[in-house]
Image (cartoon, rainbow, N blue to C red):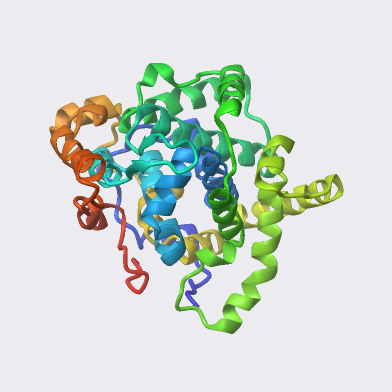
Length: 367
């Protein structure tokens, strides 16, 4: 099992390189506060990636890719690393990773068996659904199981920062909700389009067995030791679902369990947040790819260049296209392969992504 010695914050800080700059938000941002709390990288993340499957297009893309089931630990770590880069990472590597991700998503195309319509992971509305489920879930779990509700000013800043982060995806930032009321309306407007197919329910059931995200090289007894904790965490995730989502997923959990699990999760995450050793040990266990990205921000290590910029400024500075306009030739070739020639999409961009968001091979764990 991966272990970290009990050491102080300053000793941890000596183990990590400072970031080149403060990225897109920086110290004092609400994003750093909310995304830096322990509820983000288990409960918030698990909530987001399960709710996402209510979009049949996303379920089709995930099932086609297959990575969640055959390499859940690296898929979890790669995704958390990318989210960590967006929240905490320096501007150039994050802008580059976002550009590569457009290439990766170019292969997530096909015909959704539920709607019989074409799906494309780079479609702006699909990207907005993923973006909003992530940012909303992270905040929801922070408020339910963490320090509590943000002030009105903090929440307004959080949603503005959410819109800023959307510039790293193929999303039109003007379509991003910027108030709690608009976020609620966004999810209400999506309800008629949501469904939970057999494939979606299967994926959600798989993900909610959170132990699948543990390193594959753990001994059997170690995995069994984690089982009570992962099952409790799963109850916490389900406690955040509104009733209509539970009905769609076919999940039943009593109000009594909801009430009991909430203080338990709050106390657990308070303990984790107060211990640098426990916080970093858990992050290194479940998402080692994300730790070097998040650690400098969490530890307050000054950046080499103490500046922030917007994603649009970074894209212009480093020579990347706006994501929705990026790699159009490659995306067209993928559509031609899939929809005209009946071939599987190529893996162009997938291996390239390893340099930026982590290894694909479950046996190769990043430090």
